[in-house]
Amino acid sequence: MSRRDFVKVVGAAAAGAFLYSAGFPRVLAQAPVIGTRDVTGMKSSGDGSRTKVYFSRKIDAAHLIALYDCINEGIYGKTAIKLHTGEKHGLNILPREIVREFVCHVPDSTIVETNTMYPGDRYTTALHRETLKVNGWDFCPVDIMDEDGFVNLPVRGGKHLKEVAMGSHITQYDSMIVLTHFKGHAMGGFGGSLKNIAIGCASGQLGKRQVHGYLTGPMPPSGDAWGRMPLQDAFMERMADSGKATVDYFGKHIVFLNVLRRMSVDCDCAGTSAAEPTIPDLGIVASTDLLAVDRASVDLVYGRPASENHDLVERIESRHGLHQLQAMRNLKMGNDAYELISID
Image 1 (cartoon, rainbow, N blue to C red):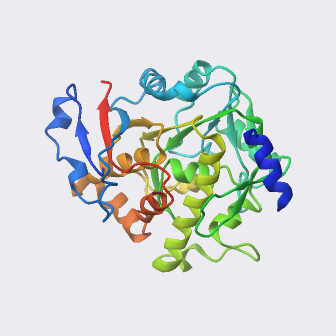
Image 2: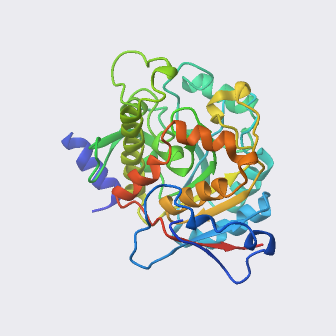
């Protein structure tokens, strides 16, 4: 049975270890061994295996493409590039010129997005398309995947969700590249590859409500959620559930790239109101493993001096953001022990 047939049937029915490679740059080899700091409060999986996470300190199209070429063995056919295109005039969204070159490098690829749950510049398809033009995402087609509704993807072994309503166009793609601007997030603490697919692929008016846990009525003021850790933990777990639905759907045909650039404590959803970043740009990480790529990104942030990472770490910890990593591990969504391999 094909993936698409499986979805139709279901819908109808209803780091750990941070290792330096031999060629790792001297400047980073002298830095703290980040993986030995127990960032998440959990030990690595312990089976001895290490996932490869590729890394470059250089943030440009050439290195983004080179990193992608290290992990793209499973990418084929019609390919979705999941990107957060941001609110109007967003200060920190990924540079369009870098993404343009990347899209040109990937045959038969399309940038994909979904509408938002909250009223704003991307609340409806019409508003969303206008925002895409304003932000310079008009150099290629952009598929707003929930423009024509949603499709239920199953969550195998999910803790809270058994299925999630995704933008219906997701089933039109053979592969997915998750190209993520890694940064802080008002509810998640940080927004990495998990957030990009867990919320970013979910349909605006149903799937995103499922993930946030508000199926009826208006969303509460954001401040009401902060600090209520049981509520926050459940949100991280629902994000993991939702992310698992997308990862399971694409199987070996999904890869992840996190760009650690302009890392505000705020998501690109904040638009022009996003706080100015206080941590320097760190580079790009890439992997076929969702848990490993997000853990490596967090480890790189935590490895910076407190004078640089204080604001972003405070945002992550005040929102219980590290529970994203634990929730993914609990669902066996990847390996938290990884080898960081520099391509510089």
